[in-house]
Length: 74
Image (cartoon, rainbow, N blue to C red; front, side, top):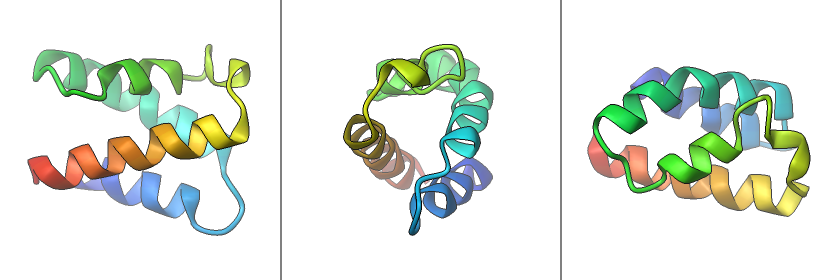
């Protein structure tokens, strides 16, 4: 999970890397569902098949919420 945290932090530094966020969300979603993370709905929204429906500000907000959730778990 710490690698997912690092990937999300790097993807939001400077210019937003939507591809990296989508890839990380895709990998994180099964774990988030299994442990019932509070932000699992945000993670699902950031998955590659849904991320294009979001604005850049929504992507940033969801990603920051997930980062905070991961930090609390680690």
